[in-house]
Image (cartoon, rainbow, N blue to C red; front, top):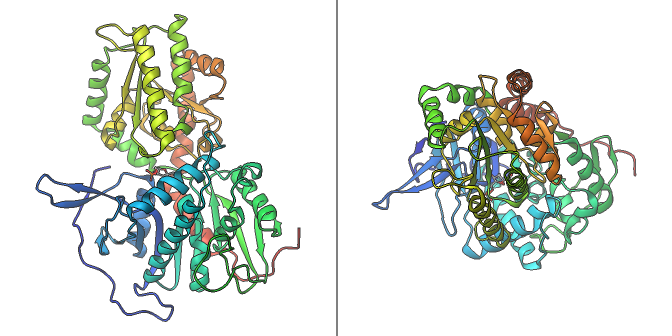
Length: 516
Ligand code: F6P
C-alpha cells in the first residue's frame, strides 16, 4: 500500500450545532479506536504532515467510510498532542488528547501492563494498580464524549479493542439512540484468568453497552459468555446475553471507580459472535507481483549470500509472539548440525513496540542476548546465522521479505489472529513457501494447511523447521494453494461487511433470555 499524505489540521467538518441527541457532528457512522489511522511525520523544517498508517483496520474501514461518510475518533499517538478535527480521504479524523501521565497510566499501564498480559494467558504477570484503573475510566469517558460529539441521531458506532471496553456502556448511557458494535482484536481470556481482574464486572458491563460484540475465535466468545454469567450474573442463551431490566449503574452521574458503568433502562439482548479479521489479500497479491518488489526480493536473497533456504520471522517485539521460542529451536538445530548457516539463514525482523513498558524492555534484552549467542557460535565473518533487524518496515519492503522467504515462522504463545501469517500467504502467488504456524493463533483456525506447532514444544518446532526446509515443492504447493483460497475468500472487506451487516440487525430491545 502506498503511503498517503494528508494535509494537517485542515477543515473541521462539523457545523457546531448540536442535533437532537446532543451530537454536533451529525455523522451517520463513527469508528473509535485507540489510535487514529494516521502517523505524524515531522520534516526537518518542523512542518507536520499526517501519513496514512499501514494498519489493517484502516484498509478495512476506509472503503466503508468513503461510501457512508463518517468520523474516526482516536489518539494521535503522542502525549499532549491536541488536534482539531480534519478531513482525510473521505473521513473526518477526530483526535482525543492524552496527557503524559495518562500515556503512562492508561496506555503503558492499564492497557499494556494489565489487560494485555491478562488477555494473553498471563505470559508475563499482569499488574493491578488502582490509579491505572482510574486513568482507564477517565480516558474511556473522554473517547465516549468525543464520539457523542460526532454521532448524529441513530448513528452506528464501531468501537475497537481492549483499550476502550468501557466506551459502549458510556455511550449507551448518554445516547441510547445509537447502534453500538464492539470488536475485540485480541483474545478474551478464560474466566479463571479474567477473574483476577479487580474490575472484571465493570469491564463486562462496559462491553454490554454494545448491541453486538465481535471476537476472533469461538473460544473467545465462550470465555466472554462465561464472564457475563460469572462476573455480571447475567443469563445467556446461545451467544445472546440478556441485560436485565434493572439499573446496573451506580448512578447517572460521571463514572466512579469500583462501580458498574452500564445503565440500562430497558431489557435488552446483546449478541456475541465470531468475526475473524483478515487482510486485503488482493492488494497484497498485486504488491507481491510488482516488478520492483520482486527485484527487491532477489536483492535481499543475494545480500543474504543466496542460501538454499531463507527463514523469516516478522513481528512486533512482543513477548506474546514467541520469538525466544523460535530462536531456541533454530539455535539448537545449528548446535546439532541438523542445519548449517550456509544452507539456511534466519532473518528476524522485530518491530519496536511499547518501548517504555518494563516487560518489553526486558524482552528486547533477552532477544538480543540470544541472537548474540547464536551468532557468536555459528556466524562466520561473511555470514551471520541470524539477521536481527529492530525496525519497522514499509509495506513494499515487507512484501519483498515475504517473497524472499522460503519458510515463515509464526510462533506466538497467544495471538488474537496474527495477520503476518495471512500476509505471507497472500504474497506467495507462485504457490511456493511454507508457513509454520502456532496453534495458539486465531489464524490457525483458518490456515490448517500450515505446519501447525505448539511453540512451547521446542522439539516439535525443530521438527517443523526441518520438515519445512526439506519439504517437496509439490507438498508446499498443495498447502499454499489451500491457504490462499481461504484468505482470498475471507478477506478484510468480508470481515468489515459481515460485522456491519450483523450490527444492522443486532438484537435491540427484547425479552432477556431465561435466567441462568
Ligand atoms: O490489537 C492489538 C493492537 O492494539 C493493534 O491494534 C495494534 O496494531 C498493535 O496492537 C500495536 O499496538 P500499539 O497501539 O500499542 O502500538
